[in-house]
Image 1 (tube, rainbow, N blue to C red):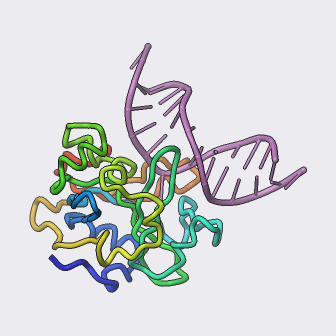
Image 2 (image 1 turned 60 degrees about the horizontal axis):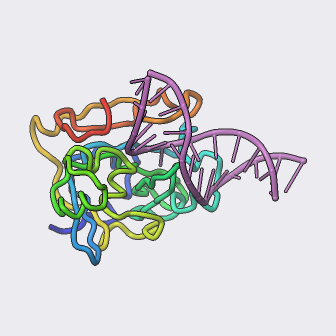
Length: 194
DNA sequence: CTACCGATTGACT
DNA sequence: GTCAATCGGTAGA
C-alpha cells in the first residue's frame, strides 16, 4: 500500500490525529518489518496549548515541530521515546503523538524488542511502540512519507471506527490537561488507557 | 556549571 | 492505587 504523502500531514493536528486512527504505521529496518494499526493519538496544537513542547518557543529539542509537515519529531521522556508526526505547515508547530498500535506485522520481532509475549503489551503506549518498532533519536526529523518509516492505508469504516475524544495523558493541570485532544478507537483493546 | 523535572514504564502495596 | 528509575532538555547562576 502507498505511503501517505505530504498533503495528508499538511492539515491541523486535530484533523490529522483523528484521521490517523485505523491507518497502519510501518517500520522497516535490517531486522525486518514491524507494523500496526494506529488506535490512539493525541494532538498538540500551536495556539492555546501550554502542553505543547513548542509553547515556550523554538528550542533545540522542539525544532522539528517548526519544520515542514510529514516529518518525525522524536524525543525522550524518562527512559522512553515518543513518536510525533509533524502536521500543519512550516513555522506553525503542531504534531500528532502516536500513543498506541494494534500489532499486525513482525510480531516476533516486536516481542523480542519488548521482552514481552502478550500482544497487548507490545504497543499499548507511546514508549512501548517506539521500543517495539525500534524508533529512537536516529529517526528524529526523518520524513515519514517513505521507508524506513511511513503511514499507509485507509481509515477504518463503520462501527469499528467509532472514536472516543478525551483529555491527554500525563500532563500537569496547568499544561492544558483539560483539553479534549486525545483520540482513540472505542472498540480497540490495544489503547494505553481508558 | 547546577537544579529541576517530564507528552513513561514497570514493579509493587 | 503508589513510586522509583534515569537522562537529557531547559533555565538560571
